[in-house]
Length: 214
Ligand SMILES: N[C@@H](CCC(=O)N[C@@H](CS)C(=O)NCC(=O)O)C(=O)O
Image (cartoon, rainbow, N blue to C red; front, side, top):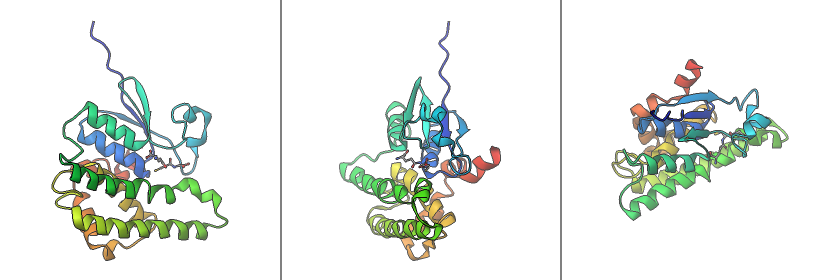
């Protein structure tokens, strides 16, 4: 009797940058999966007990794969890269890996949590929330511009697609669409963004595509 392979399920939201990181990684690794929508915007479905049983942080994404449930997008991506090594998502040299990590951290710790939709309710007014999120996003963009000027080739770090690209594109999409920021003043950032958006792994997993298929 052949063993039944556990189904891969991505719990995410079409507009979530952290979900998009994982969605693009699944695409790159050619892993078939089903995406289940957790509406973090209107339904606040992440705050239900039912979803807490899947992700104790009550955030998206979560991934059920190989019979386990994983949370935290960067941990998920690392697991995918370790268990499915092709194509590799980390460059071979320690210096390039450090450069990659600089970019990942700038996005994952320096921007995303400071503009997360979950913060909104803690501001007296929507204007105050918007000013706060814009300030931290712009500071992050300035850092990214300087880091990428040193590290970028075809991709964020040299000429290999890495985890840095997975972090960069979804965050820039948020900066442009949600925060209405003009990337024009960040030359390297904007050039890379335009180029990376045309990569199949981002085109095929683009939020608009997911929204339309829901
Ligand atoms: N560090 C987490 C962050 C997850 C996160 O903040 N997800 C956002 C969407 S991108 C979310 O679910 N926000 C809803 C909330 O905080 O209530 C990860 O990388 O997975």
